[in-house]
Image (cartoon, rainbow, N blue to C red; front, top):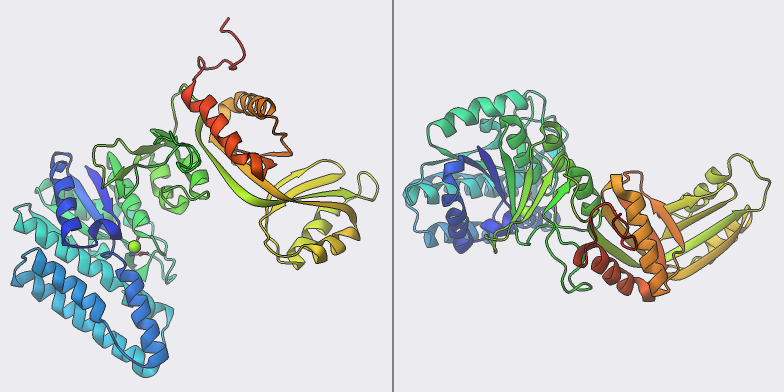
Length: 457
Ligand code: ASP
Ligand code: MG
């Protein structure tokens, strides 16, 4: 069995839904279960409708109704799916009217409200599968065994879901039925509808796959997986074949198109592989996220950079071994509401980075009371995500590249996660550094386990 998850843009209209059916059809032998988001931007449209109801006292669901009715028409689906959709649309209208009258929206009602997006999409998609003679059944998450706590808008699946989900899905799949399950939503112990947080259908898919002991969970997006670098900087950036859960989590923070780290937790627990695939480029292999990697040629998975960073060097003016210095420094940043990104410390000094666009004179003045301060703008953070077991090799090769380029490294930090090595160079040098690192790590691979300037003895 596999779980296939399609996000909002993959089921945005009739044409996209036909394409999803084409993708699934080619994989029926692997016994899939589908997890879907709401069509297109439906979740946002519902939230906008709620805002209008609250602020203007008007209940307007026209956009949402038109999209779903229009899609049913375009897919040529019959009356039976209309009989399922119309009562949902009516319930949604009534709810919006209620909100427009009482001008109040609680967390509980908001989750109930946005749940209509996913409930509508699975019914339409399942009806389309049946129309093309693939036996499918639409399931609301709770009917597929997925229940949660009552933390509205950020609910956590409960422990018993791990047993309930396979109890429902496995018999269905054994009977040759394709389950089409709502992502994003669940129900709490009292029967209230909850949501798992924006983008939560990835988490739904992950827990369903993990609970069923699926071979893998496929997350279908509109990119070729994770890339080795930003293609705007490195022309020959390529999709990364495999990464570990830890590396993927680190890359997610840099905006890579992967799962939110929270969504990977169920799969990490059971070591279920996650495959990120491009629905616009079916044949591309995509990126596979797994528990552990074989030692491969390149110790590096991907290289990213962030520009316009400010570097702050702080040297204690007090005695060596004094305590409370770090606390003193960080409380100044807290007071100025500045979030610190990278940090490196020695016995008497601290270097750290900020992304602050505003004037730092007040900060400098405050810090000046306890330390001598040097603030430098125009810096960039270059981050290498890769194999912790080979960090010495990565550092050696990266620094040698910087030396050859004449781009001095001004601060270094190996993240607490160990798969992230970050360093600071001048903004103007960052693109060259990223390109040169990419060239070294991905384009001219030396034999594994040796430094590029050593001959293999
Ligand atoms: N439809 C929800 C959202 O837009 C959940 C999801 O797409 O994962 O956030
Ligand atoms: Mg969405």
